Image 1 (cartoon, rainbow, N blue to C red):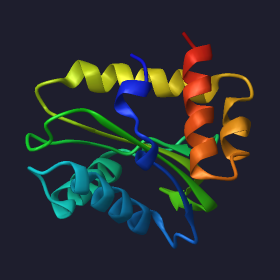
Image 2: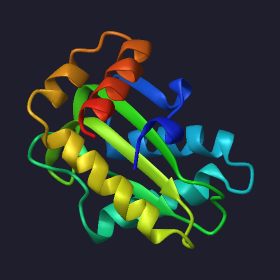
Image 3: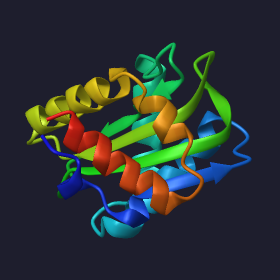
Image 4: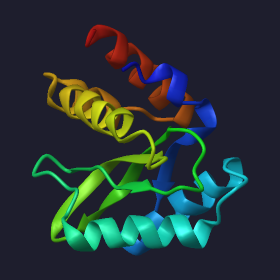
Length: 151
């Protein structure tokens, strides 16, 4: 599964000064709800938070993969954020966030996207190149380049 069809420049963010995980999740939920007309930021936020409470989505490498699956979400979306500085996701400091949003009728799309993002995050030097992005535009282009090299 390629990232490019799911990722738009406006879905790629650099978030300075986020206080905590909840603030990051609220911000991502608000931005996702703005492009998903059948859902609300509160329902997305609660789904993200519930998923984090059931099992942390963070890795020791400083990457978090929060995700929400709701019937009101009509397509799979991916948001990517760099947090400067990083914030704690269940005790693990994270500065790269891949937030996934999908519909419950397409669970395999969700799983494939998670697998794709995990491969990208494990690729040698990929996280360093993402973290080096100075602007959201540069981060977007770096993501697309990394995605193409992982084919």
